Length: 363
Image 1 (cartoon, rainbow, N blue to C red):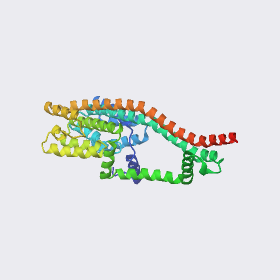
Image 2 (image 1 turned 120 degrees about the horizontal axis):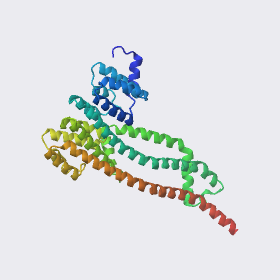
Image 3 (image 1 turned 60 degrees about the horizontal axis):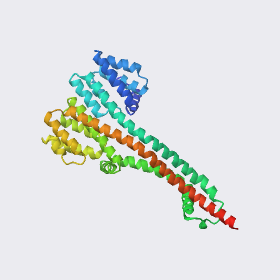
Image 4 (image 1 turned 60 degrees about the vertical axis):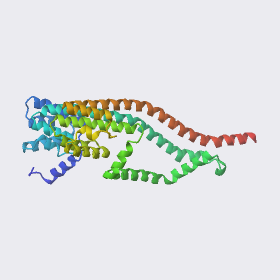
């Protein structure tokens, strides 16, 4: 603490900016739950986990945890020192477990729920990796063809104005790529940076997130993912003993969507005014009627934490089915797209060559 030199402080800062992988967190939560359940002290348990940890970043973080715990901090306070690795909902759930003396139960349940969330996210990412890789490779090949191959093939024609329209368009595109390829790369980099900065402003992020809902298939999938996240995190927090008002505040920061974030904050204000949750959400397009009706039943039975978790499982299954369908649709769509592009390039190249062959044979 006070005895830290400048290099230790810089090292701690650099580590705090690096995130711990989900898989490593899952192992940490599960093993820590097992050890605390076996009546090992928290400090001793983390010492054991640190000694067997292979990731140097996480190993250093666990060393900091041990020092801070010895100085009297709680585990939730230690986790809050590394916001890039541990989300607010994780911190608050562990905080509630510490307050209710159920830390081992909270840790194992938290690990189970994080595993379910990460499983859906991994499936979605894996579904997009293959088509994205194919598109990048094919785009690169087409760029090389347009810049290197096409000009050499069409150099045999002296009068470019007599060529078919498709060939002239191909030449124009090839010349443009050859002359301004560096500007295209710079423009893409600038556009990516601009979008990342632009998305950080609340108003523009709201427009961007709202636009994402209007994209066919992906918009519906995004909404279901958010509703699953909303239901699951809310269930964790309520089960852990966090008040419903504060639970909505935490959930609003964990849904990664500005449209839902603002709506959940309004919902928090409504509940603060003693308006029932289902009444506040009734007729809202962001929350399907089925979900509103189930919330109404939950509020009447006072079992919101258990039943809302079933909604999260339902939406996870819906997203899983949509990802499977998307995988089946993307492959033929990519094949058709590539066939059209390659077919057009082949036609634009072959048409003047065939015309030239016809002219020679006639002569």
